[in-house]
Image (tube, rainbow, N blue to C red; front, side, top):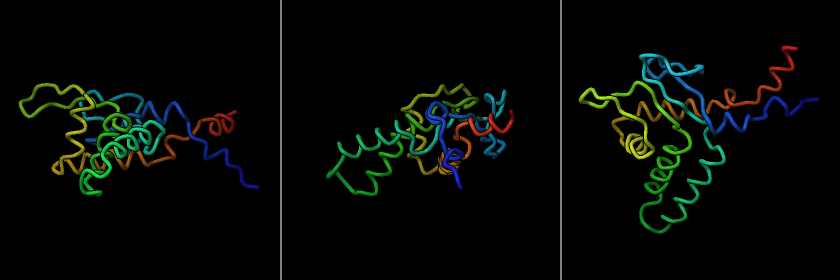
Length: 142
């Protein structure tokens, strides 16, 4: 009989996120950021915090513009706070280090010039297999 256990999400990992190496272009999780490559710490797409933030933004914005544009902005705002959790080794155009902030992350996520960044983050966040509970893996290893 099939079990649901393999589909259990790790609630902490789902919201705390996993590091990914953007420059390597892989969706393999890292223990921590690479020492010199641009890396993003990404939480699971549609995690409870993301859903709540997006719903709140949409509720406040309802009736104030194009529905598609409102959804895009609500997604960017929620992603910048609860999906794109942090970044490492990101420099501004002038070469100075760019510390992560939700406000700056939101600007990047809304900027179509950074579509490759946005798509990488979404692809990592939607890899639900990476956010599954380790209970099944631990049981198999014993």
